[in-house]
Length: 277
Length: 280
Image (cartoon, rainbow over all chains, first blue to last red; front, side):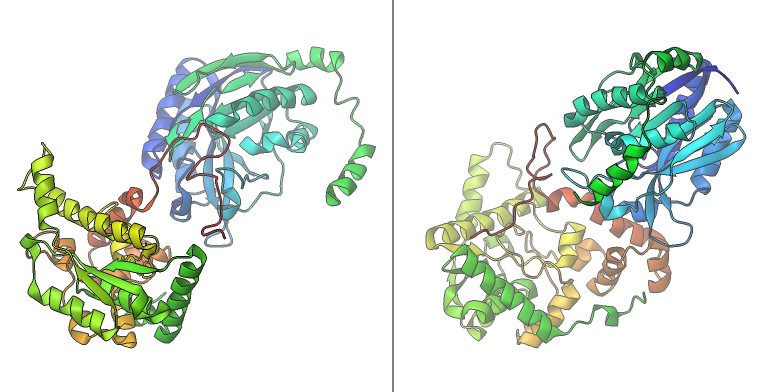
């Protein structure tokens, strides 16, 4: 397992509903990232289809593995990189049950998938209308160490990233599609999730305008001490690279030992109170 | 789902009850004194007028006949009057020709040979008249748009579609015809070829390039999330034709929504203000 490697934050805009065009962009950005030495390339939430596709989701959703993951596997294989991207995933057992899924592919093929647990359905968001929430934590063994997957609004719920960390993930990957008015929240919470878990966190946001929603970009790789290692531009497509060095975690873990100090006895109480909210 | 004509069959008496109840309820909550609507002599406007009359009484419904010289058709006028008489609706006729001519003189860019722009101007002029009456009389404007034309965007933005209520908007054209027969709209109105009357000789089916019987089944398939291949296969049509209809439906969404803005603040019109309609 590698201790040190480069991560590329592929901050793209998408052509809504056009998987071919979006896969071409995944290919193009992967190629560029590889040339700059990246071993992990991360794309935004629902980057296969665009975020605001509404009723078209039923037609665009695919099984995982499926035709689109097969094509993207070839890209990962060709460039010998790991890729994370988002797509609407059709359940294996039904015909119109869809998940908002992040897919992790390695040079040898599909490694795993994570289905978004927290689906925003307020303000401009209507995810619960279309998606079924996931019930499993996303933490997968890879040549780049154990990678945790969370998606966008999951960031607001510390337990999701905490669970990936407790599964052993040292790098939490978070594809996102966040419109402009929420920038401060994400810039604060992504740093918090990194610090409280003493883990690296790679946040990759969408850019472009979809149905009047302006996605702000600003993707960032954050170190376990909360320091922003690299950040992509706001509001425009960008490819930002940063280095993950797992050795950095040790120093932070001894300085602010959040995992050592974790109190499992509080979680039963938390569950009880949450049920009675 | 099997795409046959029977899939569009509804219980027409139930539909009539639902629509008339809706109209009556809206009028009461809006505290309006009546309904004004444009009467073209076609099946949609005759049906909307008839349902309005059934809902609140013909004496509270005003039908405006809004002819202009280029598309003037005495048969249409006759049909509009026939429907009005049948449902005891008051009518008034306003020749909009001078208004159109005034626009022609007023707008420097006006191109008399551009049928589409001029046609849209006519539809919007009719809208101006309807809203003037509504304003003046404390009436509401009742639209006549059906689901087929609304879905494919076959209407003038802010023109014929502009209204306070659109009671027929969830019924395909062939369904409006059946409802019209059920409530007693004269058969000659129900069975004549539909036209928006924006320029002489214009008929909807010729312009759209497809019969409503077929169009409605394609749209019904799309409404039910069917794939274009499946719709084409079932109806024995070229897939390209079904895809063309689907494209037309999807690319005209801007005509069916409030103007798009971009989100800047906490809550935004058209995004996340979710206030109930018609508050007391």
